[in-house]
Length: 150
Length: 208
Image 1: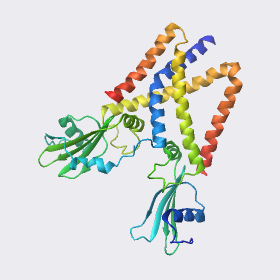
Image 2 (image 1 turned 180 degrees about the vertical axis):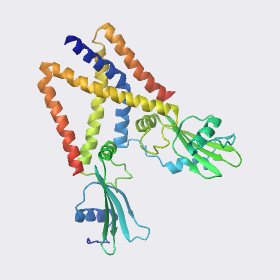
Image 3 (image 1 turned 180 degrees about the horizontal axis):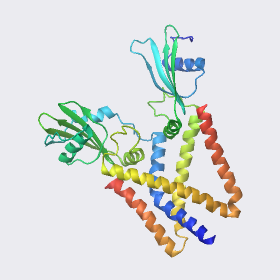
Image 4 (image 1 turned 90 degrees about the vertical axis):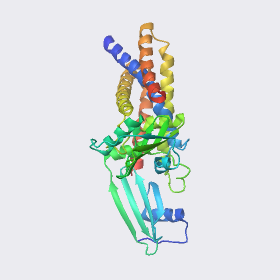
């Protein structure tokens, strides 16, 4: 049971409920039920998902906790990203999730630099290895161009 | 030892160069997806049924009952319409069938009228960035039963597997090569340690 202040706006109410339940994670699908008696939302974090139904009149909260296996944890990490402008209102990004998406950027930029660095270093090796390397590079490019443009 | 070192170096070089274009595709699209630089989240319903509003072409097709599953039925219709691409989903009943089809650069909405044998087609071009995102997300875990129903998607899926194997090879050989350079060991160890600690602490922190 929790205290529900119905005067609060939807998102303020959500934060209040999450604080009372001591829940942390990204919030998705925040919505009132069709009869406006409940506030429903999902809280997710790697490994676990909570489906919450908070009664606005009686303060009764139904929590369905689903534990996810290690593959689902990997999938959650793989798809964790910054919220879109449309999602900003209903998706609360904890600091660690922000750091995770920042690390995705760092890894992506790092990989681009490694690729370009690798191409430049190709010019510093012996002629025979240069041609085999060029052949490998051309093979990779050919497949990508074929799928992107043909 | 020298021969072994040369082999490791060659694997690192050639595997790394082969996968570099794939890495570019995935890295650029990852940044776009992470920051939502373009509106990549499709309103699937809107474009699946967009053929109800705009028809570019209508084509006759023969109704055959040899197809065992919905996907085989849809593939047969696509073949007759000469439309190529990945079937994203199939909606409909015994009267009409909606078949949304995607391929890099295009999204196609098809409505097949099963009574008259006429298919209505609406095709839209999408941007280059969405092409990259298509490759990043294909074949993906959604609708796994029907995904990979286009030859090019299957081909791309195999290429992604190959590039992941090459990436693992490049990583392992990279570590071996780094270890053999005594002068780089200290700095490399620090970089490796920071990377390892960062990912472990983020995963643990996010899971608590």
